[in-house]
Length: 171
Image 1: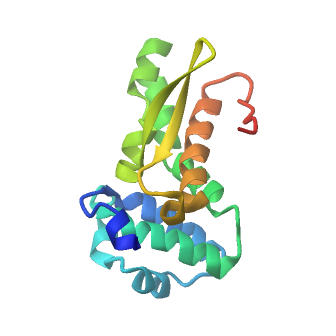
Image 2 (image 1 turned 60 degrees about the vertical axis):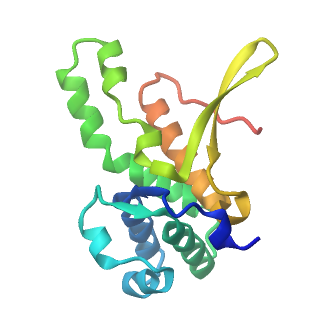
């Protein structure tokens, strides 16, 4: 089965997430214009942060930047950049919300931030419930950089609302 058959062409995500990846790529020495062309991204898509782009070029973007930089932490870096880009919103929300509950209800939803890249599922395990994020595309397409990016952003948001950092344990 080839990649074109695996990726649903109707799956989209916000262009700003691709911009975060491009920003990290540039800081790691990958020329932005060269990588945009190589991955099949349209520059016009990137001019509007909330524009919904197809997920396929985003997967290619991650793979090409990771290959060009040989940086296995690309997804973690991009996830942190995404979190930092919503930091001003988190601070603003804390100033206008009257309670922690109201603030939590207004927090950005990581699932909405990343569009159709994946979904959250609840898993019953030994009498308790666990939340998992699962990529929409098989691992061979989405790769670990996409998963690291989403989990890094989610972890950063959760850590920002806790007194003690949340320790990520090995699965």
